[in-house]
Length: 313
Image 1: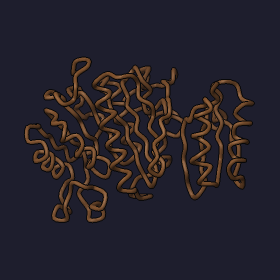
Image 2 (image 1 turned 45 degrees about the horizontal axis):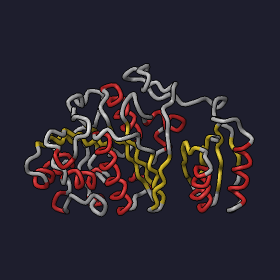
Image 3 (image 1 turned 30 degrees about the horizontal axis):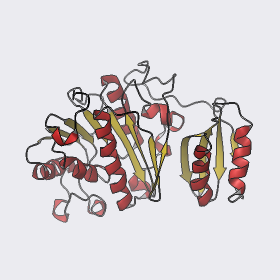
Image 4 (image 1 turned 60 degrees about the vertical axis):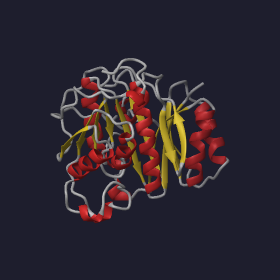
């Protein structure tokens, strides 16, 4: 592993894995190439399609039909001639070799794969950076296994494939993908420099909001209790947080009502808030975080927005 305080313009021995070289992986490789790591190992099972080109910036029309992993490896060798590059044209799975890596960048499109990366990296104690982006939103989370919150700690309540739609399902805004990927690489460098814990970076229509997250004491992955094939548990309806439906209200009434409901709860209790106002879905979580509460998760579907908040000080 790199020594404490290693600086990234002198990282001749950095070995990085990149899972997925599509909309996020392409700009992430662009940023990573400037750092000239000693080794980059790439996983991606897909072949390039014509519809990928508008957001996957390292490919050309002549590449259509070829495996993305091989194309990305070829591109990276030109970008960083001194780097060793390994292309694995297969999906990341439980047997993936990561023990010899210093860092993994999870740029996959699909939450099931992200759970696999989370499980593998936490088990092997390899630092990794989760990133996700679809439509106009995105998230980045740096994880130092057994030290900071992992993906299951933060998204355990909604760790189902339908909770994180893919770019193929809902589309993605190209410039936002670049912004999220650049932050992902920057957070990865921070993990290797052993800086303090990073927040969850939430992107919404070009704006970035840092959200403090903490390890869950009952997380099966951080505790090492989860087996290789065990899925992250989803709470039963009885265990789920209560919900308040604020559809029909608009700002500032939505925030006033949200604050009133949160203040009735004990510290650490959670509450789902439901909006049908895009403005409220953007501004209420920010205002709640500024007031000392915690944004646990959010999701949107069909014009309905659901935000899970935790009562803070």
